[in-house]
Length: 259
Image 1 (spheres, rainbow, N blue to C red):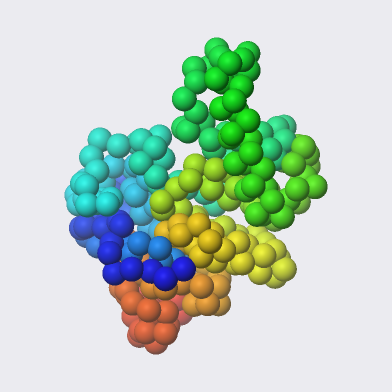
Image 2 (image 1 turned 135 degrees about the vertical axis):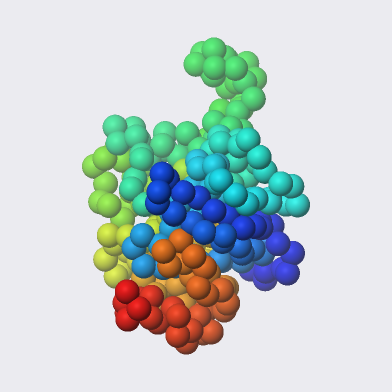
């Protein structure tokens, strides 16, 4: 998918602290429409905290999050999801006893117009609406290649497939921006290759802007348009992958030569 120079998201001077711990310090960067934007850094660098600020889970003490030209204030994850920012998590939060289909269907809840009573009875307009949403979800299941597991309880699936279901649930929200928090953590080489392909396909076929946290540097360098680097809550690099890879500050942060 060809990205544009038009920023869909701007992070401006974000600072976040918990008590005496400074998680983020005056961090600024932008995300261009339809790009894959990576956030990297050593453990404790503030990467997940940054995603939590973007999706409204954390409220920074300073700075602004600007989405499609609008400064966002007094937001929460539900509001951000309704605006078009979806999130996956490093630690899976799926409904383990529910089927793959039903888990992904939960991602359609913001799109449902019928009241809960009519949805439960599946009558009238609610029935037609559910059919439309199920069709949409079935297409996601086909896209992710998990048709044979559609009625399987998620908790019985291998870890790599559960991560795929988590991605499917986020895609069901039809996000403009997809925040991926270590989508390949804990995967073997084959599973990582599959997930890389899905991330690229989501970006290319759906035109979804992606913000990605990932520890596997070969993955980051292969699929990212640009990379922002955090270390101890501060931005130490921000450029295309080849430039970031050669940045002495980034090399020092990862090798620990300054700490």
